[in-house]
Length: 217
Image 1: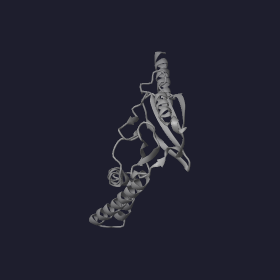
Image 2: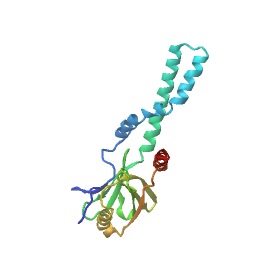
Image 3: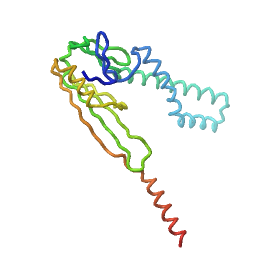
Image 4: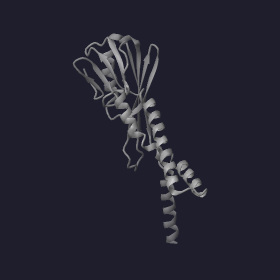
C-alpha cells in the first residue's frame, strides 16, 4: 500500500502525524512558557507609556523599574495562560488502531490524548492542498500547505494548515485504503495559484527605467 511521510504505521496503530513531539499537559505548559516570552515584547509600547508617564510625574527611576518589571511579569503570566489554554486543543496526530484494519481512533492533542472512539465515528476526511507558485522572475520558492478537516458524528475538527512538500494524492489514496473498510470518505481538493508580483518592486523598476530614459536626453 502506498504511504506518505505523514502516515506512519507502527505495531499497534497507524498514525497520521501532523506535528512531531510528545503530548501532555507538562509538555504543553513548557512549550507555552517559551512562546509567552514574546508577550511582554508585543505589549512593550503601553508598558513604556506607563513608564514615561511615571517619569513625568516625578517618580524615582527605581520605582519606575519595579513597576515596569511587575507589568512585564503579569503580561508574561497572562500570555502563558492564554497560549497554554489555546494550544491544549491543538491536534498533534490521529491514531487508528489496530494498524491493519482500524476499529478505533483517537485524537492526540497537545494536552494529551482523547478517549478512543469507534472508527465509524469518523464520517469523512477532507484534505485541502494549496500550492502558491512563484511568478516569472520571482526568487522565492513555491509555497505548499495542507489543511485537514475531520467530519465526526458529533462535529468537526479543523486543523491549521501546515507546510507540506509531499504528494497529496498519495496521502489521500493511503488514507482511503486504510479507512475503506469503515466506509470513511476521503476527499482531496487542490487549489493552485500564482504569487502576485509586488507592486513596490514593479514601481521601483518602472521608476528606474524612467530615470534612465530621462537621463539619456
